[in-house]
Structures are given as structure tokens and as C-alpha cells.
Image (cartoon, rainbow, N blue to C red; front, side, top):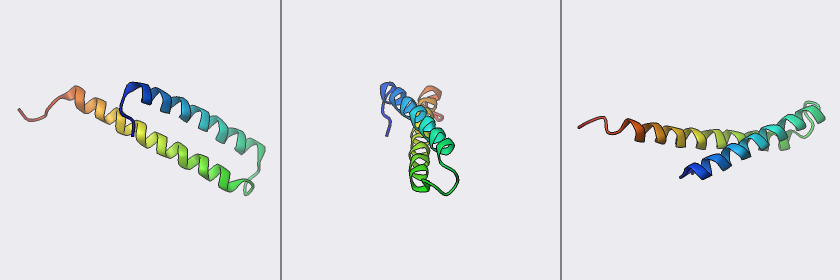
Length: 69
């Protein structure tokens, strides 16, 4: 789980690297070849998107402050 801005930046960098890797795999290997590798990269990308969204949601919640006074 992403706990601070530094981890958030690291996760974004990792996400860009994984997306580049997936793109290269898709270009280098036709459908059906290296499917497990591509699926694994997609799974990592999805996990990072989820963690980034949770962190961003927490930031927004903290900025909004308490809803009930």
C-alpha cells in the first residue's frame, strides 16, 4: 500500500515501465505467444493502478476534511 508521496512517485515510475514493457511484448510477440508473461505484466499494472487510486482517494478525503462537524 502506498503511504506517502515518495512511494506514490515510485509506483508511477514502475507503472510507466510496466506499460512500456507490455507494449514491447505486444509488438514482439503475436497473439497467443508469451501470453503468461503479458498476463503477468497486466496484473502488475492493474495492481499499481489500484494502489495509486487508493492513495489519491485518501489524499482527496484528507483535503476535504470531516464531513460531519
